[in-house]
Length: 322
Image 1 (cartoon, rainbow, N blue to C red):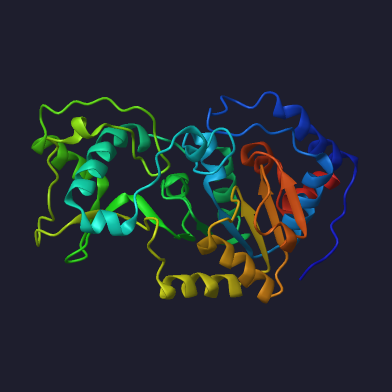
Image 2: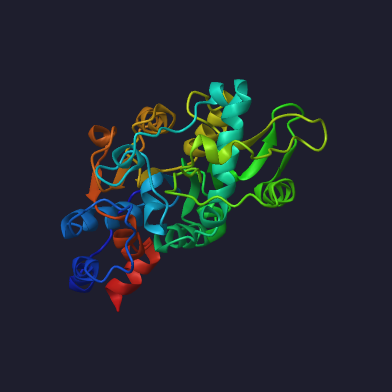
């Protein structure tokens, strides 16, 4: 399964060129932490890791989407926790408090046009190309922004759900978030508040006075409470869903973590599962991760600076022979 891959100066030149291209990275978001140019030796190791795999399992986190303009929670200096005292809503609070739901949906309504307009970046597109080439076996993302789906990823599990879907807590009917936006507009025709700052789940910052008159619709089928189909903080991912992802990992031959610190156990458990299955782990992330001690390869860098330069096995061999 794992064979040596030949290398020559042309391949090493391409890897070293990652450093050169770093300075010309286009329009880096204000939400991307400061990061040095990727180390050529680390990139070389990742290239070898990916080229050896025929059924790669990839896990992505917020770090892949910050380059699309979506902030994360934990990045030093630029994450939501560093920039503000506000914290994401807790599941129990959303379910129990009508006022909390009104506040959440008012802010989400204001932030939705901007949040839903974000587009996949080069890292998302690269992973989609790997899937089309038949080398990426499965991708699980901790993100709720739908950017992998927008890029065309099909072999995908959204671990924490997706903000582009809404679920009724009563009858479990799932609808599109875009349809709910139209209902908001009908119920609040003269409501025109301005947002101040965006959160990773599309939430924005509004005062209590601003949201006091905002009207929130109920489920059209049963009159139940509507909630984004995402796992809020304090809630858990279903065991059956986790096991279905484990089944995909069982069919993989290597695991690549992209843009995640794995600080939350719901993501970290997949690194532990990979270790249990004796699968090699590579990590691409700007800062330290909870699974660094489990990784055989660690690359410090921005996802968009590194992934587009990584070739699959056939591409690697073709370039080596040209």
